[in-house]
Image (cartoon, rainbow, N blue to C red):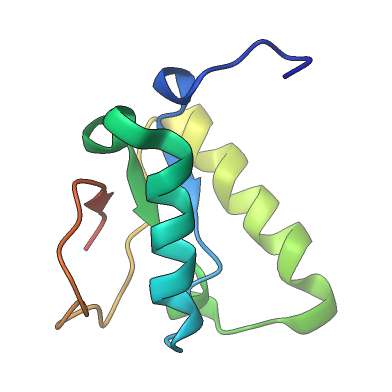
Length: 93
């Protein structure tokens, strides 16, 4: 709220994405948060490429996100062959 950003200002979300039931819950929460802006947003999980680094996960994902902004490219979610459900959010394959 303090940044005065709206869902329409969001281009990319780096999801937690650990290939568990929580992924569906996370996707639903993001859809509720962004509403009609969902079709404009790309979402991926870098954990599919580097694994869950536990205490270092936040730093590694921040670096991936910064590079995504700098290079204007979202990192892929590898092995996302059968998404559990459809969504308007662009899941980066």
